[in-house]
Image (tube, rainbow, N blue to C red; front, side):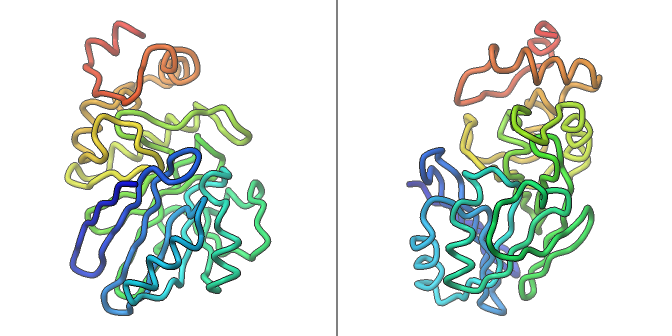
Length: 240
């Protein structure tokens, strides 16, 4: 298990990598002023996460979900039961969720607050019908919508490659210096700036929707290997 820490003015972001069967990345946002914590997409090991937060002297108050897939939510109910944490999810994702606990919904450009720390919601459907990202000061938590030099598949209920194309246009508007944090460590680097993604991630380099859909659904999986490396425009054009 690998761990990384990023300290900002109002919060510390800690990430545990390679957790569980599908080697998920679990994100913890620790708000300095309130000593409260939000956990993003908790799966596989509820007690480990709760103990980590408690050992730091923080209280877990919030569970932020990026999308409904089981490998991102299979510890949500257990954590909510043990801590009473509030669960936040995108408004268009609720029909796919199978949780026992009530959820609070958010929509595009909403703000979620944890003490003095704020995160802006960005709707990024395509991998799922209602996937969202959390944009904090200097950091984007993207779930499986965008990976380092890759993007989520469009193979499960609610997914749509055409919709994902339009989400990619939103990612292109995010400031170059923002660090990307993903739901899985699939890339040649564990995190990069958005500038690196805009110049090397094929999903952010295809401007035509039809080409994008064809690449996502028929070309990508047979032409890329893990860990995913940056792609040149010339190499991408040759595939298209």
